[in-house]
Image (cartoon, rainbow, N blue to C red):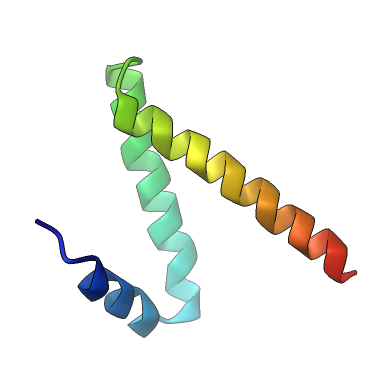
Length: 65
């Protein structure tokens, strides 16, 4: 089982410039999974959650302006 606390710590230790690489790689992994199996629930859920988070961040950014 993956320890999410360890992952949070590793993410916190990353340089800011590395964060886009993490997101890009995650996107590519799940995109490939969905391409190979359009019924892959985990991949589909990843993109649903990503879409929701992007919308929330966009709304927050608009509210700050």
